[in-house]
Amino acid sequence: MKYALDTNIFIDGFRSEDAQAEIFAFLNRALPFTYLSAVVMQELAAGARTTEAARDLQRGVFDPFERRRRVFAPSPTAFVESGRALAAIAAGEGWQTFDENPSLLNDALIAASCREQGITLITKDGDFKRLSPFAKGFHYAAPWPMATGAPR
Image (cartoon, rainbow, N blue to C red; front, side, top):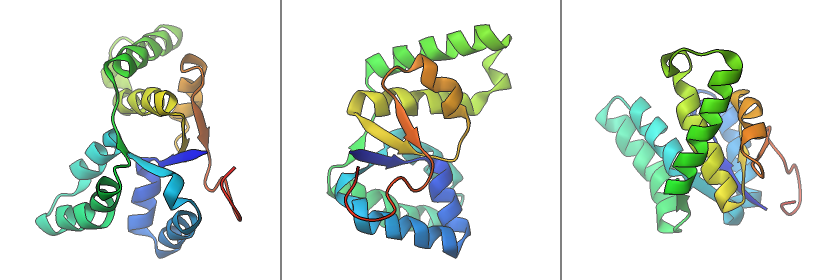
């Protein structure tokens, strides 16, 4: 099984030593099976508002995944699939504009690209439950899907 961490997991780790310890414990078990979404990189980079924060993010998160060639990005097909999922949700929920749900745009891209790569997303974000019926084959899990031993 391959995994990726959602933006909210990283943010929790930046804000809490306990959450950071949980991430490191997971990575100690699953690092060879863990990837980083380019969409998550964009969201994290947007939150790094100082030169120091950007440098720490690059060194502590981005560089290790980039060195291991474990960064993945949405393909053109993922963009189309995410757009179709968003259209279906918007129609079903009666949105007039995407301004009503801006974070869902990136979440749809993350879901579609994880599905393409066969990656299970680890997240606390409830939007993925809304997206999963429209992204057949997409899997997500709450932290932490493997408490001990080898990945499932």
